[in-house]
Amino acid sequence: MERTVEWSSAVKEVYRLMKYHVWTEGCQMNVADSQRLESAFEKFGLENTPRAADADVIVLNTCVVRQSAEDKAYSYLQSLRPIKDKRPETVIGLMGCLVGIKNNGKLRERFPWVDVFAPPSDPAPVVDFLRQREGLAIERVEVEQRFAAQDNEIVLPLHQRGKLVAAHVPVVLGCSHACAFCIIPFRRGVERSRSVDEIMTEARSLVAQGVKEITLLGQIVDRYGYDLKSQTPALATSASAGASVSNFKFQNETPLVDVLRLLNEVEGLERIRFLTSHPNWMTDELLDAVADLPKVCEHIEAPAQAGDDEVLERMKRGYTADDYRRLVERIRHKLPNGSIATDIIVGFPGETVAQFQATHNLLAELKLDVAHIAKYSPRPQTVAQRTMPDDVPPEEKERRRKAIEDLQERVVGEINARLLDQTVQVLVDGDHKGKWRGRTRTNKLVFFEDPRADWRGKLANVHITWAGPWSMQGVIAADAPAASG
Ligand code: SAM
Image 1 (tube, rainbow, N blue to C red):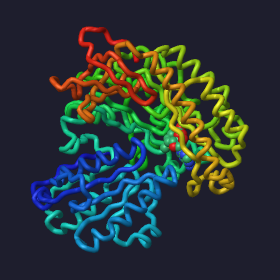
Image 2 (cartoon, rainbow, N blue to C red; image 1 turned 135 degrees about the vertical axis):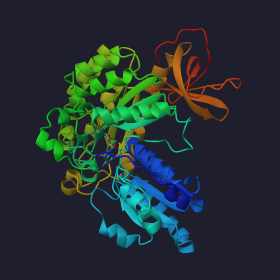
Image 3 (cartoon, helix red, strand yellow; image 1 turned 60 degrees about the vertical axis):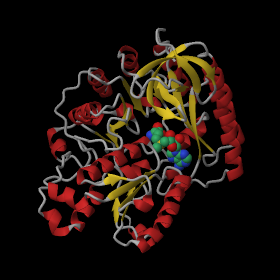
């Protein structure tokens, strides 16, 4: 159930001079969750501070997809203890995947200086804690409805308002796929789609606040809406927290296409993206929509994870390396100027040198634009952690990671070099060390200098003068038509 909240002037007065600091680790979903939390804090009247040491309310929004991310959260939590010792009134909150969808008693025991725990996509416990803490003052307040994770009238935090160019909108929460390595289903619960109405309200609200690009998020974003389509009225009324009830009549077989078409009509919005796509759910209808709709960018994020069939089977991915090849072929046929990103896990349990080589070969053959490479780390409760020994030694995992990184550096260097002397259209999202920074429709990072103009939030045609594997540099080519890039 999605509800909005209006903080009364009394609440605002209570929190007026207080500051909050939110530390975010992990995926775009966490970034979006933090944005909602910050939005709620600002409705309280709290101000943002970039330093935890200056904050009255500190929240860590955590990720546990990899062991390294989890370790980072633990060490950050440890670093907060002296702050709590010195100023016991400081509110410390722990949110996200480390907490999971169930409340974790062990965390409470281990980190007694944490005041409040909140699961992923649900800042309500933190918000409630602040509200309750102020006791009667806050009870007087007309807080009629709880702030929910997907507040459908999201107000960007002040420090981002009018400045944030690209924002994320979660459309599918949770995941029911249960890949053998992945902790997400255990932490974010079963897959549920948000209603079209909620998504559109949130998107319009973001655009009204200056956002020019929206990326729709889901663990398997191309499965968006199938659950809504099959919802019976009985199921709809018992929809669990975070799920949506939809009266929208989908026009397309692939419900995500309906959302893309509606978003494409939103005035002021320049670009639309979506991620992550699972290879088994990418329909031709969706690819056609990407090709047809001018605002939808020709960039597909479809993780392969591995290039060996036996590894893919043990990962429970549900496709073979040849299926993935065919997917890439289909994408390239429909989007000849598009780009493709993938995720790769190296050192999955039992992965032999030959099996790793198959992954390496697949990438060398397909020449994808981006590969996010992760070394396998066992995550609690997952099938892999419970049933498969983590038997690839750390130095061998690192060797495999580096081998793929080196390959990608060469491959992407060659791909980007083709853009030299071309003009690309860049949406400028900020500046960096005296240069404007933006991304092409294909999600490539471009820098250019133009001290005289304010390019933030604008589309610029940039003539590429230098191209490296991870970024490009160029100069403004105001009159030249933008090439695809
Ligand atoms: N749901 C998407 C999918 O798998 O199709 C991707 C989302 S997941 C949060 C992001 C990436 O983290 C995955 O694609 C995978 O490459 C990586 N990842 C997930 N679990 C991992 C683990 N146990 N060890 C290493 N990498 C992992």
